[in-house]
Length: 268
Length: 197
Image (tube, rainbow over all chains, first blue to last red; front, top):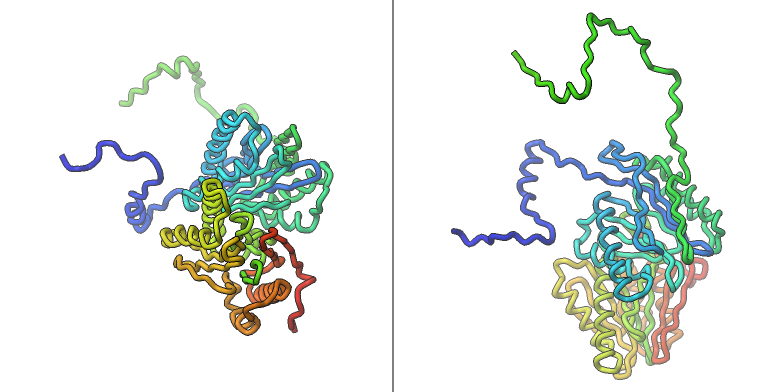
């Protein structure tokens, strides 16, 4: 036969379909958009640790795909990571590094450090040159204290006392820039995070629904799902049920689910 | 930018990282330690320069372990050059390497985008550097002392920040000598005098 390999290499991205996709695009067949989290995520250092916050809307183009998704991902018992960008990328990247961290922790016999997770994430994302659309806020408390990092899809990182990412980041950052100060108390910090996320929820179309909060302190994590729920559906103004008998019928016929399952439709 | 003086070097940078028109980090530290007496000034892509600096930093550690002494600034610059040149198609990184070593005292090396290596008395880089070439060429004299060098970089970076939209924040300064590294921050309200209209 020809010299083609029997087993195709499995690793990395394959760009074989780029030309085909371009031709299809020209003919009018568009690629469906990946689910993006179009998000507001924030992180904030306070007196005793780190507070992470996130909204809960996942969008697919202009449609809301999930009204209550989780954007704060578990990394280690002392570390959580908020993710913005492509939902699949943030989910898989954080899960992958979380599993590597667990193995690392067992190998070293120590609790994982936040810088370790940060380095694993940045080196992974840099390798994929920005094609993995994961913009992350990593926060945790380890032996060296509380730490907060942002990690961008291309692999650059920043170490800061307060951070925001996602489409609602500008709205959230305006809240932090006007209110943050060092040495906040726990309640002040959580309220500020809630205010920042709500600013994103109400001013950014890509963010919405509820506020999730995660407070990480020395030796303790409090994950509050739905800390604030400012978008509850209102009670319907009236009952829209039609009274029995609205629809006229000639003769009733009922079939049980068992009969449905075995019935065969025979068309003439 | 970086300036050499007798006894060491002074490195300085602004603190702005932007994504398009948004300032992602207004207090960035662009003066990155590569070893206890060698720093690099990063400009270009944040992801690329952080990755390259991490790799060189690793090699510095390895060199120290293997040779039992600190590598010279020239060795560090050479490592930067190797990475930047061999990967020139995939990197957007313009780096200034400066530090102190036992052999030569202070040294400054510039590695622009193509991956060439240039040893100089002083070097400027980044988007704001274009606005201060004239000021630097006119003000710099070989044989300036430590204090004069510090004044020089504060003035130069301050002027670049004023004129360049992609530069801003605070001025970070580090002085590297045989005794160690002294770091300083100059805030906007303490800039050296400039005509601002």
